[in-house]
Length: 256
Length: 176
Image (cartoon, rainbow over all chains, first blue to last red; front, top):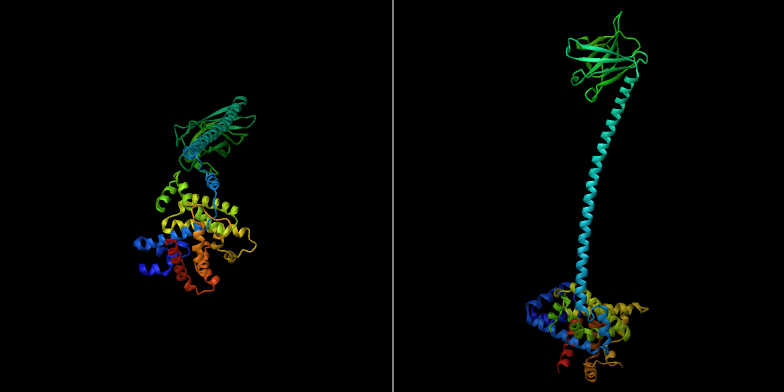
């Protein structure tokens, strides 16, 4: 469509009315930008309609002007208001930033506390374990102190000549404790097994394993009660223990 | 001041820009609103509402969407029609067409101090009745071409050209 055709088409009037379809509206808009004649025509149409609608206006009293200004909040103090608004806006942003910083710092403090708390609770657990352990140890000492224990020293044998162990046996209560401090740490997959021996005929009876040897700092082990024994021996056995002692791995042996 | 300069000022929310906006368009918008709403006091309320809408939505206006005049015209018409409908038992838009701007101009309470009432009455009355009707529907009442064609019982294709002829007639009268 040429600019002349467009002007004559009546579309420009509808453009000013605002009743063109969006694509036609776009078309007119582009023609206005390209052709000054089209813009002039649109200006003229608008001017005529502007005047026509102005003429149809009943008398509009001046109080409407004040009323609308008030409704828009743009009275005489507008400039001041704007400045105040800017300050308020600034305060608003500043407050938001501070709030964010605050939240962040609280959050990171919370995280730190959480971490500290975890550290403390794991320390607490460790201490509880330690206390549990010392309670047991104390009980052992208490028993050793109170009881009537006979000490049997087990000397190192061919398999481990430098090894030594002690058996504490209370013949009244029959309780037996093994002091394994003089034994080397058992190799992986092996465990010390304690035997009570009676003579004629020589009969070994298992009275327990020195389980978790490396974890027991005191190396004091409680084993099964013994009523009669002529000697005690300790052998190295596969984990879980054996039914009868492996004599080649006899570490220590001692007569009561 | 050109329309473009005014828009720039208003967009900057320049303190003076409201005065320019009001001086330039208050009567014009009031004319359009009153043509729909009819009641003067209610029209004043609508005018306030329209200015608030224009002022608060200026950022959404840009020239690619059409003339500034068209944009505010649309706001005024739609707000006025909403007002009209809210108090009307019959929501039909057709009811809007029973009265036109000539009745307003020739009514008892015109005119603006700025305008020569008698002169305008005279020339407006020189417009053909069909022209008064078609300009009233398309411009003042915001009818679509299709609605206008139905209302006037003329072929859809002739609305555009007939309207153009009428606007030309109006322009000649205003310029003479």
